[in-house]
Image (tube, rainbow, N blue to C red; front, side):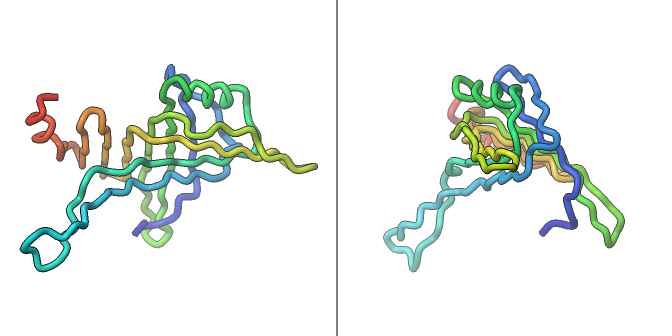
Length: 172
C-alpha cells in the first residue's frame, strides 16, 4: 500500500528519436496499467490439486488522456507507429503524517496502440486518449528499482537480474 499522496507529477513523451515533448498542463489522466503474470493452472498427474505455475508476463497497455493536443505531441505519437516511443512519469509521494516524501520515476517504452483523433464538445477543451503497448519498464519508487526488459531477459529487482541464469543458459 502507498505511504501517501502523489500531488505533483510531470509526464513527458519522448518520440522514437528520444526527443522530449512538452505535455505540462494537458495530461489529465494516466493509467499506467499493470504487469500481469500468466499462470499454468493445469492439474498434474499425481498432484493432489492444482499448483499455479508462473509463466511469462502478458502484454501491458497504458493509456493517457489529455485536454488538447500540441503538434509536438502529435508528431511524437505518430513516430510510435514506425518505432518505439517512451513515456516518462516523474512524481513525488508525500506522507502528510510523517512529513516524508520519496521520488517516483517510471519510464515505459513501446509502440503506439491507438492514435487519438479527439473528442470534441462545444465550448470546452478537446479531449484525446492514446494507448501504448509496453515493451520496457524502468520504475523507481523511493530507493526500490524494478526493470523489465523482455528482449534482453531482464527482470531486475534493486540491481539483481532474476533472469540472468536463464539468459546465460540460452546463450543470449
